[in-house]
Image (tube, rainbow over all chains, first blue to last red; front, side):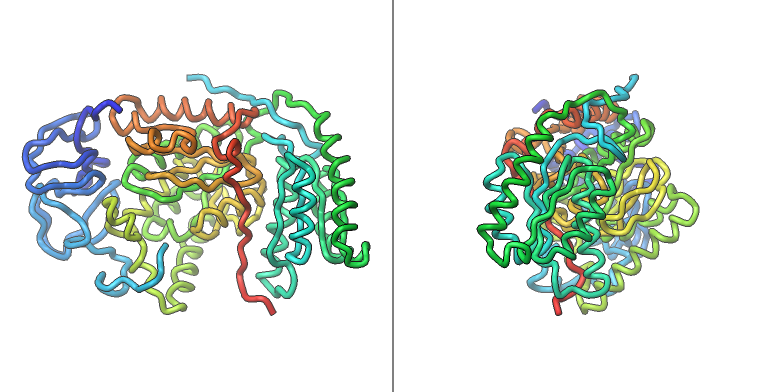
Length: 106
Length: 387
């Protein structure tokens, strides 16, 4: 396995988040967006496959990945920080994302 | 790149050519499953499908169950079928529906041997042996890629599935459709939150059917009192970085590619024209794959993140992973390593050409790991309880 040519990727120009292609530590990281590569300041540890914010996202705002809305920010999310279940909620969820039902797996 | 336009397959009297030439030992009711297992053991190389149910079923459950049994028998990868049943009338009905394809079908039933399972086994082995002997005389020949019906599945997804493996399967689906073949994507629940994206490239009339199918499944889940979204994405998905159902679904539907969706199929319903189709079916991959096989799929593409060993019994199932560690950790499971795309070393297009080539190679007879190890089964869907 050769190491990736970049460490994170933006999947669509309209996206609010990028995806880490390897575990990231806070600091400058190489980010690919379309055919361009840039250096981006990550401000939290991001596990591989997880998302971080490309810009400050206000509470209640739509959050986009793949160019589509994947949910709503439940808190203000700072640029460069981890976007996940602690600050992003499905628009389809009928109940707040809290206690998952017990004993049932997908 | 100019794509290959033919593969080496088995021509059939009617319908598309096949990628395999199985004798299917098909027990249509649980009562004859033990005898069917004995018969299949005596016919090495045959494929066994022994239904666990088949009586005491009503309405949609009975209809869907029968459609799956008949569909598996009609699958072109079965060169001949031995139908095993409890009573002649039911077995004949299944055999007649299968033999419309022009393939040889034999029937043995328990009532005709006065409930003697050993006599049933003897008759079954003799009929089956003659069918296999005949099948061994058939040869592969060049047939058009357009004859292929390919089921596309994902199981045990992580972020690499949505980033690379599923878009890669989608790029191959586009190549197949452009060559006149058919591709089928299922797992209705994995369209939830992304149904508008599928609807955007659906033929007129199909878009609304897709949205309705998702709503029906969402409502059915809600009716059980279960919060569908509380466990989807599941804990493995969440650990892998997927936060919401929309996000998971957007990654999942990438495996459909970009061509026009021609129809929404019911479970095990064969497409009536070539092109891309979606099947309103379960998200559990063993059942989903059986739905595709019963609709005529002779090949499967199956994407995974950390690995998933399960393969379909009738259709060779290619395992595809883009996770940097999975292919090297599971060298006897993963047929196609797409991690070079994730690493930025290979373009998605190059990988899609490579995967398309492997697909036709397998269609022409090269074994998948799942076939070598026989890590295969058919799992038929039940829609209700027995009466």
